[in-house]
Amino acid sequence: MTAKKMYTREEFEDMRRRAAAAMSADADLADRAREVLIAADRYHWIHQTTWFGEPILNLPQDMFAMQEIIYRQRPRYILEIGVAWGGSLLFHASLLQVLGGEKVIGVDVYIPPDLRDRLAGHGSLSERLVLIEGSSTDETTFAAVKGIVGTSREVMVILDSHHSHDHVLAELRLYSPLVGKGQYLVCGDTIIEDMPIEAHRPRPWGPGNSPRTALAAFLQTTDRFAVDEALDRKLLFTCNPGGYLQCLRD
Image (cartoon, rainbow, N blue to C red; front, side, top):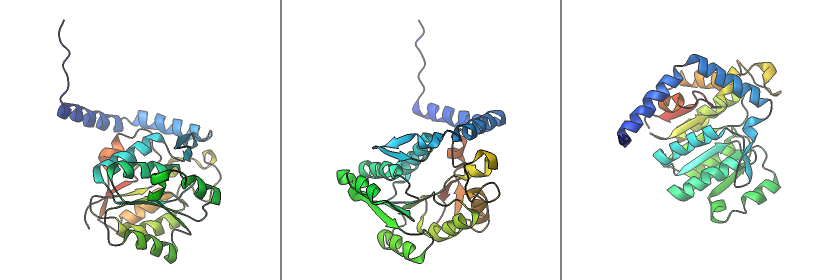
């Protein structure tokens, strides 16, 4: 019997890159994946995952993408605009606990007392969490965030709150200066631009008025950030197509 040839790690990585590039070029597959995501959204597919008992309002594929970024870049601080049920806060705090880092900062206009209590019940993991209640675009909220991260540029920012064009653009402009070279700015739910109005749950945003349109406007005004195309190519199912931005320079 002929022994099975094993890939070297370099060969395996090369195979992965080539396969991801080929997959991203398959327009028919991309369309079918998008159709599945849109159809499944009627059943709240993105609401079905939890971490340490708290819901994560995102696809597992996107959470694994976040994990890859955090493992590679080792941010000291992770800022999440949009807390929801707190599952992603705990997910990111778990990674900082293992990899090193300081705090995960969650910002939302309303953080229920019972959620604060649950998030406080995870021992040393909870000590990595800082919750700030207020509008993400208020000066007082930004000042509170800046008071925590100080002069550090090892900051990862995830924008996942109110998804209208104007609000997301204001967030991009306000928080992008916190992100230093090599770190990431993630613009969440850019998929909204691909979702027909009738397919999306009633919201004050939609195609033409979405994170994707805000991101396009933002990128026209800066050369500090670029879409991580390699990451984007391998995410067949994602809520954030084109939304993973890496900072190219301080």
